[in-house]
Length: 98
Image (cartoon, rainbow, N blue to C red; front, side):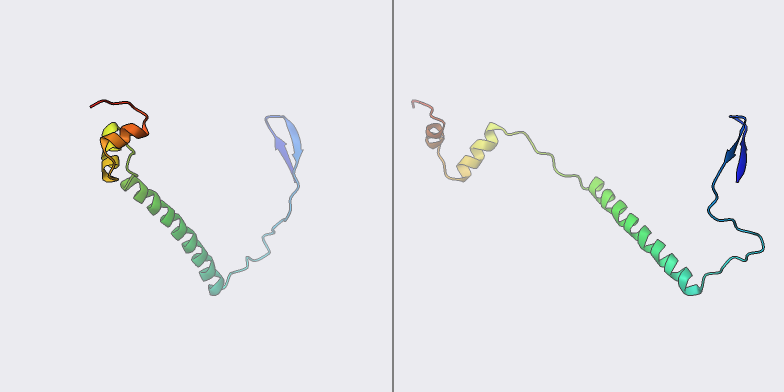
């Protein structure tokens, strides 16, 4: 196929794979083929909907923020484990006089 390119002011040659003529009739697909095509589209869109719902759920229930470590939290955990202030001081190699 030959086309005229007005920007370049020259003829351009293009390869054409198939040429459809007007006298050829379009092949009609059967009902079964149409239904299979529609089912494929439905499955594709269901997958997209599922991923969008997952994104929506993630937005509506965000992960809790982690608070930075504080001394009170450390002491609370140590007390839960049964450590006394003296035990904590020993583990930190601190010399604390009473």
